[in-house]
Length: 232
Image (tube, rainbow, N blue to C red; front, side):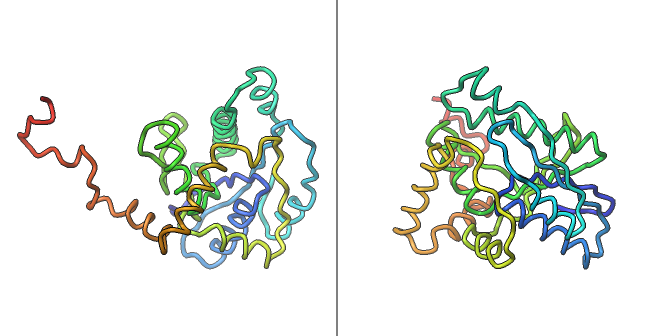
């Protein structure tokens, strides 16, 4: 994920995962033989006013340049567009704004704090609500922006992230959205929680199945060379 000469922009939401990622990246930078730079950006969506002074102080303490960028994404999503399912549009606009900031500040990579639970939830959201099998990858190159998105915490269980964040007393902000906790992601979260109660080590087995691509048994893998039966 990280190579010599990289300049990486960490996307900060104010939640436990992105704050933990800030500290993890800075600690890694200190002992890694790989030489890279790290900055951090937090997008203000123009919704509720938040006090980010503790996050600014935290970033200064660990030695990361941190900036808050003010946007009108909240107004676009909830007022101008009046989206019934605003999360997808909001996420798209946030990704665009963050990638733009990264490129403008000379970064070739953007680091996001998605954890293992996010991977599994996104898989079920895509399958149940979009009718496709898909989830985000650990590393994704965006050719239009010439920037690579990395997710260093992608194998970290959310419960571990929460435990570490509490132990380190990270300055976590509450969710800054009126529909937080009432989204499709929350429904997927509850589904995964239910499956975890039914199947021992469900998350571990799911991640193993997802990452072991040579054992995929999907229909496109079943088409043997020269076999025309699937066209009948």
